[in-house]
Image (cartoon, rainbow, N blue to C red):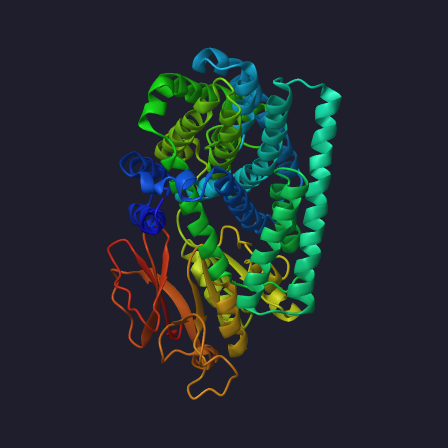
Length: 590
């Protein structure tokens, strides 16, 4: 290809990757639904976008492997082992074992007849299709909004199947490529699997040590810390793949797990560049890989692929889920929803691209069908679950209750009373305070007290304050409120607000940074506290009722229990059926 063609092809891939994700966000659909058709259409219309022509097959396969390692490292950062305890750990383990075994065996048994391929190639297709992945499961779950327990189980399963599927795919590929058989002896295969795991674990330990040096000892800032993470993951993953194929995926996810679970890592609270990079990599990979699928390659496998999708969705996944969750204590609705969520994602596409190319070069019969079948299974499963997951979740009763779940930080008397009134308005209120006296005050008010160290949880890379949809920071330390508003933002599903500092404040950071200011410029923290001490109280009344004199509107509670505060930047207009939370003097005799 000429230089101009390389530039044009590279630009088209970037434009399609970014444009598809932007459009998907506006349409509120998983980006994968648009990325795969966009890459497929572009590949059918223009040769310049084909990655094997831009880079060459070996170079593209190596780039895919390193890119997936970065994605899995980022996924590992979101897996806090403290959230995987008790029945959750047991369920995830059984889902992994049963899912891998049943999916690979059923696919390997059906594929020879469906796609006219040898059993050894069908076995490779089977292990490719066991993987799911957080890049597709996560967006679907965010769209559906299931309960936190269900979300946690599915995210852990989706993330951990990726390296397992990659390793099994590599072992099967080598068995087929070197011996033209799948069965090289159970002991031999187990030994090979153990060696791969050992190499990956050693790589993960090296990666963890390097990040401890750069992030903990050298205490690099956000920018250099992000660069250090990227360099470490790429280096360790590449080194492991050189030592033994596809072990870099294990090293990457082990490193991410270690960083997020070992106490003491000095990780940046926000990783906007790294998150942006991962999002871009996902888009580039999906567009590039789908562009290699031609319309001519899809036609012979189209109907059999639909039949395979039906078996995987309607038979295999429900059997795996119900077997894995038996005697787990999960309600029937949650068990059924777990059985209705197993989309395939980027790792399936990446492993299919890498392994199929090698078998095609060796002239293996049926190997050319692996990529189009995988492409159709990815598209089919994502479409099925994207279109049906939300109504199924509602029908099964596993959607989180509507409304705001508020985390209110602070323990002053007026803050606790405000939390009590918000709870009386029908909101789910959770409070946190650091002083024992304030924590006791919260308990005495009958309000749920958040467990553990709030900031330690909130600053964990990739951690989520699960179930919390809004945070109000109202301690008597304005600098704490300002700093916490920066730290917590991004780890909460909704907005973060703080009470305003006193006018002409000389705090270190409070006047200058962080968080939307609650209640406007007039009702700053010390004014609220003073008015409460002078007898003002919070009250709730229907929005249709006349506003009492000398009362300020602080919140509007919508009919669906969503809480909208009055802030420095916005005034809220109540609607019919809403309630308002006011602050004002209490008439004598009340």
